[in-house]
Length: 591
Image (cartoon, rainbow, N blue to C red; front, side, top):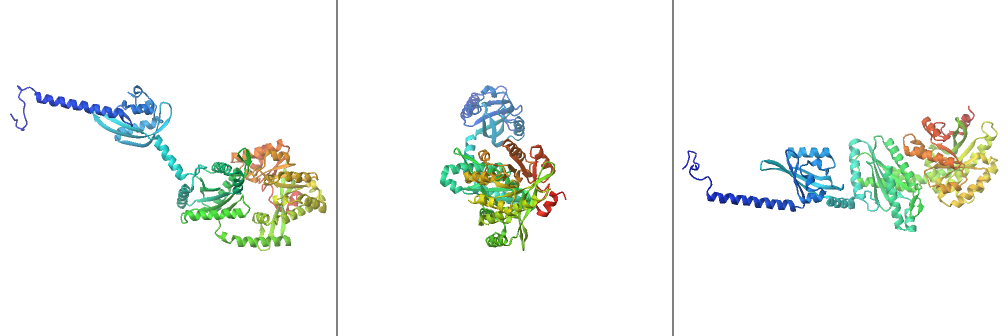
């Protein structure tokens, strides 16, 4: 019988379930049981971790064996707890936020999520959640795949592709990417960046004499030291061999200030690189020649920037190694200019175009005890030429020996003049002696002859030697110093802390004084490392019975810091700039 809506109406006298409908219900129940059994087998045999959450309460309702194996917790330790209560999530607040997101969105995927096992190990997982209705209950299923090994493999592939296998530094490929990023950033900001190309001096000799394994050990230490000298946003890379490249980002919008920033970093690099290297049970020394180009746009390509820095580096090597040169578009003319400068220098010596300026050395209550003589070149066309522009050329050409002899003769002659003036008689004169000059076989005889010819008092003459002297023929150095010391001449170790000296050398040399280099004094109030080095030099001098003088003192605060640290002798613009002899004599006489 059909009702008005044309649906089948069951008569009350007919049973509600016929044999046929009962069979269908049994079949459905059986199918459901089979399906549930199949799902349970999949759940328990899955090679991904599976976790079921009650979407309303956040409580864990079930976990599969693989997740238990993966994380190390028992089934009972999971059940009834919320995600952040198990202890596997490294950040409780973040896991709570994650659950809120899962509740709100259902489907959530995290490609790389850190989890902690019960044993405390950190693993990386891929985490995917889906929500669905199960018999009226909203259930969230979380699939958790351990990607720790895959991630390690990916990182290893990336490391092989982008990092140098010897030093662990970025390689040429990654350097190009970092350089392009710096170029783009500087173009947008208008702030200069720098590309520094570095080549280790005489590295081939070390490789050839000691073997490539020792050379590799040296390169590793160099990479480590360079990395400590730069900021986190900078890049230190190795191109291959003994070539390193540094990208210094975000220096300054002003080019001159940016260049100063580069020089500051390079000074720190030189201090680090010039320290001895412990390799194979022995100490080795190494220096670097560096070339720099500044940039603040991406109009030039990265390859051309590399060429500019490389060219500047070769100019650095030509200038005597262990130095820095900035790229100049006119560098192609440098060879011709250098030849002209050499001719001018020879003529200047012949025509006596050089003069000495005197910078006061102070001790006690601003009492002048002497002066360091500094060479100046009065060029007929160029005017006063600073020593930085001609000393290295003089060293390379051997003209430094003639210049050095003239400086010593002039300084000793001035001592004789001062000896007849009451206010000046006790003053000393400090003269810088170059390594090439000192290594002349007849250097001692030259000094003694100059003293004899001028009649100067040897005890008023102080020779300033650099640390680089100490690594070449130590026995010869010691012999010459003692021969001169026996005549009353004093010795000061110049630029101490920037070179190669060791305690074993210092104990053997008849020194009177250590001179703290201006690179440490400059930032002594702001750089804890420079402050510590200065204090250490003072303490070392005191322990060895040597005087200590600091150069480059430009402020009262620097002087006060040094005084508190035990250093009571100073030289620098805070007291007096280098002056012609007449000007120095006036301040020494209190005029």
